[in-house]
Image 1 (tube, helix red, strand yellow):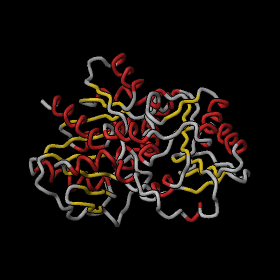
Image 2 (cartoon, one colour; image 1 turned 180 degrees about the vertical axis):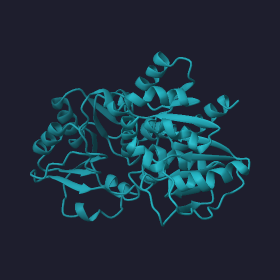
Image 3 (cartoon, rainbow, N blue to C red; image 1 turned 135 degrees about the horizontal axis):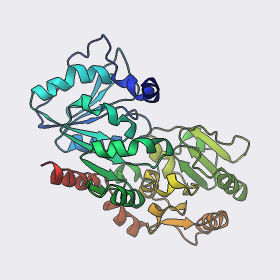
Image 4 (cartoon, rainbow, N blue to C red; image 1 turned 180 degrees about the horizontal axis):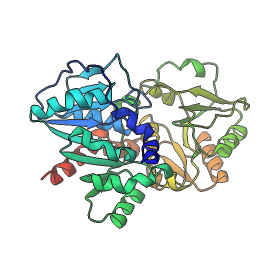
Length: 366
C-alpha cells in the first residue's frame, strides 16, 4: 500500500484537502460544467488542453481549468464568465464541486494525464473523456485503468487510434488531431522584427516547442553547420536536455509565450520539426506544424506519419534529405504554397476540432 501511495505521490498532492477556504467562485447557469484536472498550467506553452477548453467556453459550456501549480492565496482567476482557472484543486473539489451538483449541473471531466485515473471520482463526473495525446513510456502502466474509467476516448493520431481499436474494441473512440488558430499566426509581413533577430539579415530557421530527448540534436547541429549564413533559432522549454551553446549561429531564445510566438514565426524563413523517429514521435500530431503553416512558412520535417501529405510540409527520411530540402527552399526551388495550404488549414481549426468532439460526446451521453 505504501508503495502504491509513493507511486502516486505526484498526483495525490492535488487532492489533499487543506484547511483553507476556496471562497465564492462565480458560477453561471450553464447546464454543463467541463473540468480539466491539474496537468499543465494554463499559461505554460499553449497546447491542446488549453485550446479545447477555450473552445468549450466559447460554445456554451462553463469551464473550470485546474492549474498544475497550486496556491493557498490566489484560489482562482476569472478569464471570462465561462472560463475560470482554478489554483487550488483540493479546495475546488471540497467547496465548489458540491455546489455545481446542488445546482443540477452535469459535469464532463476532460482528462489527458492517465495517472489521474484513480482520483477522478472526486469530481463527481457524469461523463469522462480521456484525451489520449502521447505515447509516453512512463504513462503506459496507467493507460488500461484510465481507458476503463473513461466513457469515451479521443486520440490525436492514427497510431493511437489503431491501438484503441485493437486493444479496447468495446470502448467508443475517435481520432481528433490537433488544430490551429489561423488568424493569430497569420500576421502582416511588415511587423517589426523581435529584438533577438534585429541584428541578423540572412535566413532564419526556426524550431519552437519542447527541447527534449525526442529532438534529433545531431541533425540540428548539422543544419547550423551547413547553413552558416542562417540563424537557427530555438524557442521553448529545455525539457531535461540543454540546447547547444557553442555553435555561433544556433541561438536559444528561451520560452516564448503563445502570444509572442507569431512575431518570431512571422520573421522566420523556414520552420523545422527535427524529431527522432521513435514510439513517442510516431504517435505525435505536432501542434507546431499547424502554427508554422498558419504563419505562412514552409516546413521541413523528419518522417512523422502525421506530417505526411500535408501541403507545404516537406518530409525528409534522413539527415542528407533534410539538409537538401532546406537548401532547395532557401534557393527558391520550392516553398510555401499559400492557396493550397490555407485551404487545408481552414479544415483544421480548433473550432472544427471542437465541432467533431462535441458531436461525438453527444452521441454517447445517453
